Amino acid sequence: MAEGLYTKRFDGRTFEECRPMTAKVGVVPSADGSASFETGDTKAIAVVRGPRTLHPQHMQNPRTGILRVSYGMMPFSVWDRIRPGPSRRSEEIGKVSEWALSSVVDLSGFPNTVVDVFIQIPKADAGTRVAGLNAAAMALAHAGLPMKEMLSAIAAGKADKTLLVDVDKAEEDFHDGEGATDIPLAITSRSKEIALLQLDGKISPEELTTSIEMAKKACDDILKVQMEALKNAGVQNG
Amino acid sequence: MAEKTRQIVIPGETICTGNEFLPGDGAYRDKTDIVANRYGIANVFEKHVKVTPVTGAYYPRRGNTMIATIVDITFNGWLLDFGGAGNAFLPVSEVSRYVNKNEMKEFLDFGESVIVKVWDVKARGVDASMKMRGFGKIEGGMILTVGPNKVPRIIGREGSMVKMIKDATGCNVTVGQNGKVWVSGNDTGMEVATKKIIEFITENATIAGLTAKVENFIKDMGLKNNKPEIIAENTDEDKATEEVEN
Image (cartoon, rainbow over all chains, first blue to last red; front, top):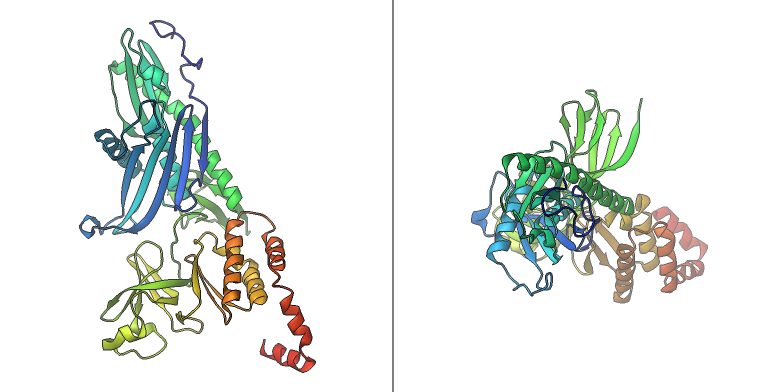
């Protein structure tokens, strides 16, 4: 795919290639489950606490436990300081992450309880919500909660006419030609269903289908990293 | 044909394939595959597949010993906080002596701690009992929180670790599966020493050959030396009675 203005990636990757990834489980000892996930210069830490009784009581659901996800970027995670505390953007990302994770986690065995997931971004270079989801899925598994399957997420995208995966900040800000398109996607590990799909920018239906296929391939690589991290942590504990 | 394999599995991973396998705790069937729905160790025992979680919060099981705190008093029992999802219920009928329902506070008050047995785990709650010997209200001593995942290391193989701590310090140590340990002894110094040993175990829980390390740690504290000397001072008669008691 060498036509258009973006023919070679800034960091020399191929267009189907993710940034180097590292994953770790059990990074926060006091939590019930925790994990960190790093791709390139983006890092996410996820902490799971619960299941525990939900207060205020009127929010309790007697049929099932509920999942509550909060997302936040640390003030020093980007070049110009981010004002700490909740913002419109962080509330939205927390909510979409919650919906994505709800499709794999099964809390019907814990009525009237809540499972809290806290995602923090200490280092951001685009793709923070998908890094957060990767870390959160590992942290939920690490917390020993029932899950139908795992979840892996990736930001597919387009710079000018070129389709690519794992968009970094420089590519997200690509202004020439058709500009940049950013498509965060979350794919479940077993049934390969889409748990999250957002789209920011312009893209044709054909290109979108191709992007999703590319993202699914990339998610297989991410799943391998997640699995390895979980299995290694298990060896230590056993 | 009893086959048994152990492997670490993650949610959504196929453990084995075949219609003859039966999914148990932590597993489900997807067509012919048996799939894990928890992160943990998969056990395949005679076609029965289950996954035991190795990390995470405490989930009570029937027969567990818990150290819990009274958080509410109802008309026919107490609600206990055991550090997991929800509360356990201890009915008045499951305590070792008669309690007047108007004076339940006199027997167990808010904030007091008890050692209880998990009597039943139902879909909507946990029932506790403290009728048996060794269970009851906690008076004196101190309660340490170690986390449910460290409990097997503190107990040791067939209780060897707990026995070692008890022998070294002379303190009474009760381990609750919910990750709490009650230490009580006649001597506060010894209680503190026990606390230090238990903290050492939790800090080094992932290290292989922990028993030997703890033995050395106890020796370094100068505790192990006391015990054999006392026994050596005993006459043969005392020793004999001790053995009978055991």
